[in-house]
Length: 367
View 1 (spheres, helix red, strand yellow):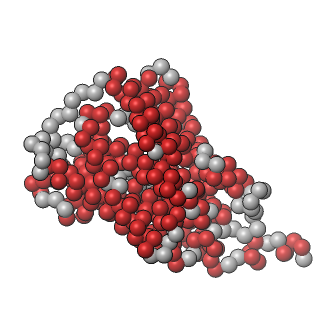
View 2 (tube, helix red, strand yellow):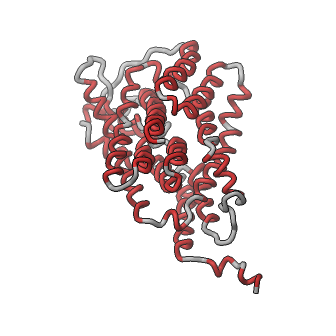
């Protein structure tokens, strides 16, 4: 009888079966549609195994995946390591060549703050509202970093929402971009940017770290690792460290991050009415962030002779580099010879920094 009591089949619940379907759906989208496969695939598998009964994988203090989550996410280790790899991949040249584009990245955080107030009005606590709002930055690691500290019970739902909307950038953004611009505006050709020197690229991560961390100390874990990775890249003397941060280390921590996040999505944590609100509010946050960056570009054009193609403002969300690619594609519809990708990378990178600063502000206010 003891053997039969330990059979998982006897402990199944309808909620677990529903979560299996959700996990399998994410796996399907990752494989067949290639929607953020590096993270949706392990997240989907994490959901699947977390909803298999009697495994003990998420038992506090004992479970294997619980250890990944506790020491990696709760102890704030994995998201900063992801940022180390991102920094090693990043070329800040497009941003440094046209510093004014940083304002577009800042404006694109409008959806984060607006959704923060909206979520609180819907009854979420301030900590939960901040975690939901940060989805608008379209930055998965930052969303996870903030959720783990302010609202761990929402971590799985917010992470899946953030990565889902990142994957859906080519679907969500173009209608907003076309709605808020004319064909003539979309065809604006921006002046060729100046060439950025290697010395400028080397100094930037050092200066940015000092300025941003002095202004928002709570952003230090992500900003410091992001800029360290970029310093590896631009120093040109630590190729082994750069390659490790870009590839091996990035791949390892991505596996643990995705699996840990997925495993937090048990049926009792996920199958709740408020989770649906999270996905709706996250979509609103992302849409508003896209629109606010675009509208600021149009406003700036009223006061400058050197016109900005408003589409590049939509790249202020930090879905790098997908948002920049979408900007280029929509711009090419109006003018096939208009190459907007490198211009769009400026606000795209500024958006990454802006989202981290927003998370730091929330932590400072609410932690």
